Length: 617
Image (cartoon, rainbow, N blue to C red; front, top):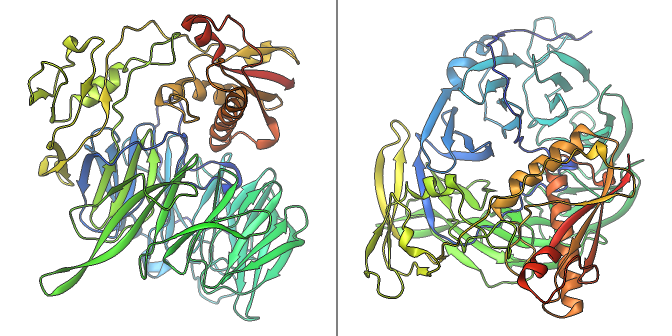
């Protein structure tokens, strides 16, 4: 009989808050793309950078805060817009309580967030942290090995993943589900020997892997999420490095060595296997209906889910060890390269953005300081790049404003104005404006209906130190975007209760904005979409159809495709934020269902809309 070992358990009082941003929560990791919101990174402008005490890895974002750990096992919380340090926690101080029983404090795993809790683990224990203030809520070691004469605490090997109110992870001799609120064990299964990577969940199932050294065998295992019983178990080739599976259209995709296996979600039956010319060296990700992996620790490859064939790839050269993040049809690749500094070869990080299918980058960014990269993430149009001891915030969101309820343009929100006030940026104004007029703490009201082109050669970015958050470095960058200010109306509020709608009834979802003539969401859409997610979670039996509509500008064929793609982008946002794909359907109508004449701009604005239709409830 196994029982949990309580080494440390601390309780703090948590005020009730609005839970809005978990990470990651997308179902089945089918969109393990390092992004939850579908907002693209438009440029390579350096917004801010932060210096930690050691190498940084695996940042995550929640509710306007960035969380990450460094190699010294220090956990940091920064403000997403400014890079200001809000709190930090030394896990060595906490893990020292476990060392007498659990041996060594190993590498920190990938962090996850659920509600107000930040979960992070190392080889010793799993820690639940209040994400608001950095205080430990609870911390627990692994399970005892009851067959040993003396108590040996099992080390934690696999990264945790959260589904609902349970957190799942693997130890050397167990696979465990705990309650997130207090760390109590709900179930454990000692038939699974986990050694690396996070499990994958889908509906009432969870998928993990078991490497059984005594038999020199390796299995993919499907379990019941709430009880831990094994549903099926499939043996595959024993890999050199273990990577997590992903789910797509009721199929499970898992890399092993030079192969990728496609298995049936229901019974583990092998559908196909594809072998490549080198080892797969990353977790797979799904986006835009394709699989993405790295091969040979140098190539980023996009694969067809139907047969595993390579659709296209980009080679970043030997020992580049690329990591990627994807948003819609764009991919952002961080990679390592060496350059000669004095008499030594020093590792630096590069970052390139691509359209899917293109080998020519949209933009590039090269951090000024040495250091290899780890997994980048994207949030609200900014990419957070860990490289060496630094976290770089890349991508500024200066855009042509949108008029609410008007032509698909918008006015910068007050929080965006406040965020821009933190930047010391020199702006060259078009027309008769001064060539090097300052744009810093106040919004220039003289720019009403006038373009302001940022085209100077020097604008200032800042580095904040880990101790004080004070500026420690400045770098010149070249901003590229255009500013314009337009009168606005008060934005419509999404306050519809889905349970009040009947089956077959449809409604326009207000305040969903896209980039001009494209299927990229804008940040101004996130509040409305978050409320829609909240409504769908509140009503789990409701199924909807997302309908896209356009005006008649452009060809009928183009508008049809654009409406379909925009509806799909909204669906992908909902899936990334925890809504089951089985509850969603998309349909594009193009210009075929206008609600107003297309002869005026006001009418065309009404025709460009997103609707939802209630299918079941």
